[in-house]
Length: 280
Image (cartoon, rainbow, N blue to C red; front, side, top):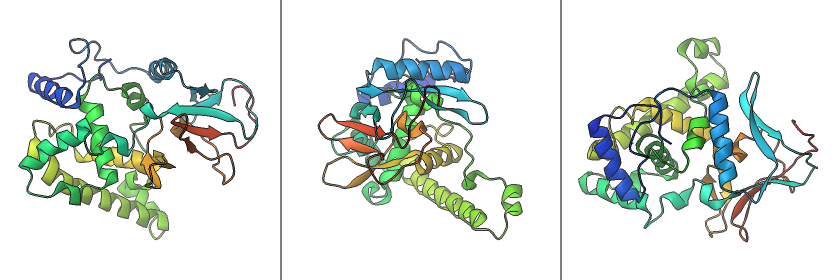
């Protein structure tokens, strides 16, 4: 499966370099279909991807929902407190993707050789995850998470993405101030990463892929989807993207219905906060 944009010869060369560093193969010889898939096609691909990984427990499916683009519904009746979704650690995107000794860490080592800054001082966990996601999205045609990335919303509605006119309409409110501040911080972070990471190895981070707009998009996803999950590594809660679970629209309580990590099965689990009938 390949992404929906055409690759230039230079970009293909870059992809080959990155996939070799990350230990991946490329897609089947290049671009197959440059048309943008519909939401229904994206859902079908994501559903096939989820099924291919044989989740220990999965009583959900993704559907198009009028007014909400898409969301999850119950495939079978679910009782309050029941375990209804369990996502294997192999599908999670968290610190294990950039920790010492990983392919991504080795790639950053190449960047460090050309950078004038100490990357360990300027790249926090959020920046590292954003870089990882943008690399996987733009530079790895057969990324493990391709169906997940394709399903993510491209237009976010958080305050940091409000237009100037929308912010003016909210002038004086905490929402407007928060939106401006979030955008200011995200832009400042991008400027630092662009200067010390992207510009240090433009062959690995092409300018037209690693833009400020893409950085803000990934930053927005992080702020709205990342779950602080205790992975039982001794580091407490760590920021983690959990495909499918991050699409569930329900309350997270402080009893047995919150998201947890099962160290025995190595899965992220979620229990129901209420009873749900099929289709709810």
